[in-house]
Length: 379
Image 1: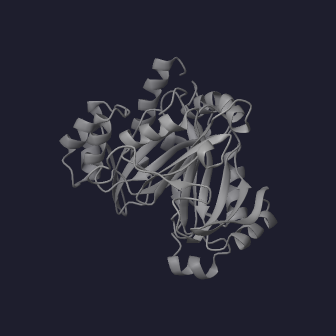
Image 2: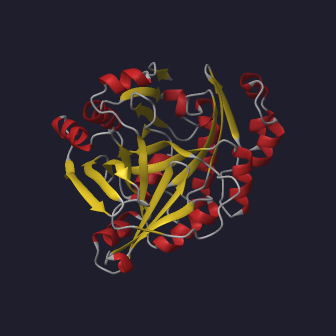
Image 3: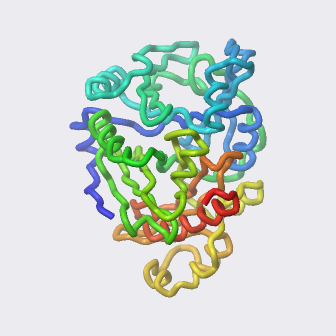
């Protein structure tokens, strides 16, 4: 693994030609937005805050907005046949269509991106209602994914003009399960990873934060390559994966086949209490990948990770992985795919100083994914 020094926040704000404030929303296309909203409210502890649909003037699309801390998910579902959204879902299944990013100046960000090679999808424009004004624009990235650029500094509504506030579907948990989006991982075709790394470097002035190649990220059967791009403040991090030549079909190959092309593979959610979060989510029916007991009994692992806030036995009981680097350690666990197609899944991550992505857990994670692939007949 190779890592580049993190840029300082001060340097990023004064010199970065494409400054960002953070993730604005993860936008999903789903077959049934109402049911998806219920799943994420009950299983992920998220709070329904906004809605748009036929009752509000949106004739073709129903949209539900849920939040947990600064993390915002938007679920869009078609309400009639023959829509562009419906065609997208038919081709790809449920998945992420937009990784929306908050920026301080949409006009400048869009101009810089397009001048440096981005394909513009929506030019900067303002939308206004009684709650204020939002500035929006959009550029294309891998596959059919987009980045909407958002400035909501002059807006106080539930999400965007056209949305109305909605009461929660279920009572909010006593303590939220997660508070932010940590990173979003994209899968691209063989040979395309470096092309998209360069895209983010040129178009958004992101830097290459880390890369994982060779034995870092391989098992006996499958392999992949990954690089991580991030803005100067590390508020927005996008790992990018591509398959590598191997004996059998990798998790990236499986994703590309079932999604029908490049797209967002998983979303990592930052939690302050992974033990409680996993217990609550599992009790609500969310399924997590299994980790064999041998992982926790490995003396090399125990020696490498040292002392962590949770006894290893507690991690083992919940199948939570642990990794340590020069900056600290992290705890992480991954869900199984959250829809019928083996595509999008989630990661829960609790960081204690570590800025990494669990390099020491890659083999255990990929072997767990391979066990699920084998059960599906896709290995």
